[in-house]
Image (cartoon, each protein chain N blue to C red):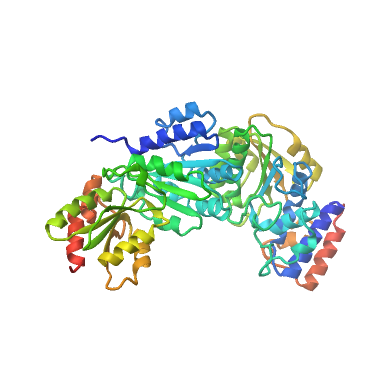
Length: 308
Length: 261
C-alpha cells in the first residue's frame, strides 16, 4: 500500500487549516519549499522561506506569537532543536508563548548523511522546558488529526515527522492528543513503542506469540505529556515492560515510563534506545537493525531481559 | 546633558549603590536613546498593554536598570519601586522580566535574542496591516553574536520598514572583538543605516521619526560608556558590573552634577 508521505500531509494540512485560520503563519529554513507552494499561493503573506538561519527563524516565530499569530517553524530536526535551543528556551518558553515546531529528519532518518543530520535528543531537550508538548505522528492521519487538535493551544508543540510510517491501521477516532493507544491486549509482557517502531512491535508480537509470550502492545503518539494511567495499568497487569524508541536512552520515553511505574511490584523493565552517536551509513532499516530497533532486536530484548 | 537625563542617571547611581547591583556604564550610554524612543513612539504608561502601542525591546538586557529608571520617568511606576532591585521577592531584576514589569515587552538577558523577536513582531504587524512600529536596542558587544547579523539580513530581505534597530556603539568590545564601522556593515546587509550623536536626544528623535519606505533602519548611536561621570568613562571595564560605595557615590554624583548642560 502506498501511503501519502507525512511531509506531504504536513503541506496539505497547512493548506487546509491556513485557509480557514488567518493566524497560521509558516516559516521554513529552505526545506519543503516546493510542497508548501500551494499554501503560499492560497495564503499570501503567510509563508516565508526565511533562509538558512534557524535561530532567527525561531526568534521571529516567537515574535509572531507575541503579537497573536500561531507560527509553524519547519526544517531539519537538529537545526531547530539543537542549534536553536536557546531561542526555543528563551524566546518561546521563557516568554510563555505558543507555537509549533515541525521537524523532518526524525532520529537517523537521514541515515546516509551522518551524525550532523541526526537528532535523537529532541524529546529530552523539549521536555526539559516548561509548557512544551511533543507529538510523534507516524502516520499521515495522525499528523493531520493531532495538528488540528493542538496547534492553537497555548503550548509550544514539537511535531517530529518521521520519513517512515508504522503502517498499522488505527481508527482515527481513537487518535486523541495525550492519549496512548492500546493496540493489542496481552498478559505476559507490555511493549510500548513510539514512531514507526510500532510496525516492528506488531510483527514481533506475532512471533512472540508462537514462543508463548502473550504481548500487550501500547502505541504512543504523544510523547509529552505521556499517558501514564494507561501505561501503569498495563504494567500492573504484566509486570514486564519493554520500551522501544528511536531516541537517546537518556531523557527518552523509557525514562518517563520507568519513573511512572518503578514501584510496580516485581517489575522487570528494559528499553531499546540509542546510546551514542550513530556513526554508520546506509539505509534507515540497516541502521535500525544495527541498533536492535527491529523485529529481531525486539525478540532478543524480550528473551534476554525478561523471565516468564 | 539636560535635567531629565541627569535625573535618570542620578537614580541609576543611587539605586546601584542601594542595591549593590547594576551595570552603570552601559546604562549611561543608552539614556538619550531611550528618551528619544519614548518621546517618539506610541505608548500609554497607564495602560501599558493597549493595542495600538509601538514596541520597544531592550535586547542588551543588562542595561535593565537604565530602562527601569527611564520607564519610571515616563510614568510606568514610581522610581521608589526600583530601589528593590535584585532583592528576593522584588519584581525588578538585573535583567527585566516581562511578566513582572509594566512596559517590558520581552524578557531579555542573553545577547542576540531581542532582534529576532523584534523582527517577528514587525512582520506580524505588517501581516495584520497594522501601523505599529518596533524599536530594538542592541549593543556593539551584542553584535559579536551571529544571530544579530542573520536577523539583519532577513529584515532587509523582508523589507521590514516598521523596524528600527538602535545600535549602541559604545565600543565596549575594544578589548576583544570590536565591531568596526557598523554603519557600513548594516548598509552592506541591506538596511538603511545612519550615524547620530547617541547623547543628543533631539538628533536621535529626528532620525527615529523620519519615515523610511521599504527598508528597515539601523541607527548607529555614537555613545560613551559611563557618559556623565568621567570616573566611569576612564575606568570603564572595572565599573562594568560594579556598584558604588558611599564615598564613590558622592564622587559620581558630584561629577554628574558638574557635567555641562
